[in-house]
Length: 70
Image 1: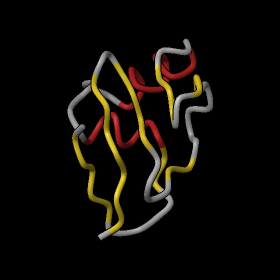
Image 2 (image 1 turned 90 degrees about the horizontal axis):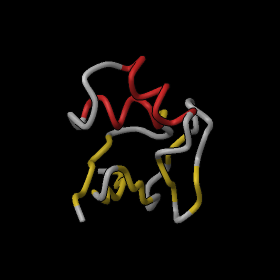
Image 3 (image 1 turned 60 degrees about the vertical axis):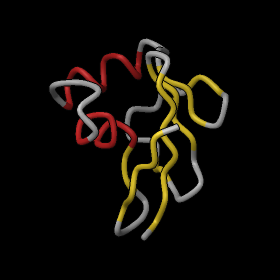
Image 4 (image 1 turned 30 degrees about the vertical axis):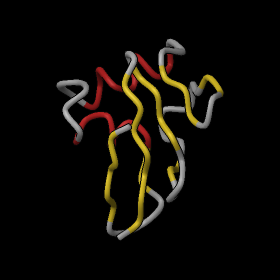
């Protein structure tokens, strides 16, 4: 599991995918989220602007990311 450190919360889901290099653009991230290809805390998430908080776990294309506030 990869740790994603954030300095403030909340952070929108699509931004995490973009900034972590899992997608090339925010638009691509929004399309994939809307298509149901991302899970948050084990549940399929289709809200592109879902607010992510410390402790949330994102799964996308077989990779897991845990959000942590530093």
